[in-house]
Image (cartoon, rainbow, N blue to C red; front, side, top):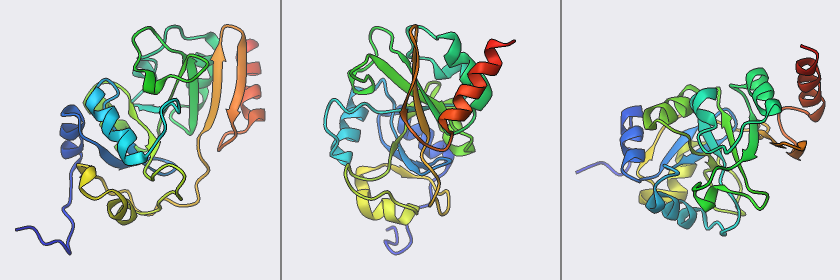
Length: 210
């Protein structure tokens, strides 16, 4: 019988296996702890929205292992999106691009876009690589509640509702990822974050000169 005072220690392999069976995984990113789920599993997305108390219509962002798989759900990849991906990934930049037909609606915003980033955190990238496609990247806290800084706080919040918890140490104080939407008409800043609007504009201007 497992000692309840000493929580089970999970491995990366445990996390990948859980994702492949439609379960949830709490894992570290470069900013905060996130909750990972297979975005192609309807059961996993249902679990995710239930534990988050998240309202439908509030899309879930994704984390990918690399730029090649990041645009798995993209209908098109504008030049500006490729430019920013090459310049800032891995890094705290979420790029929203037009979603392809058949993308789960839980991932798609009112503008028809799906958001993804390539995290510099090795655990986040390894989970996505193990699944073979992006994983969900919503923060590990119920909607409207403060973010958690430690894995112990996440365990206390979600308990057995999450299958696997992967340790990443103290994750407090980091700015959230910047979110930028890009389509054929141009780009716009959706949420300020770790990368400034000026840095985005400079990267795009530099790319235009090449």
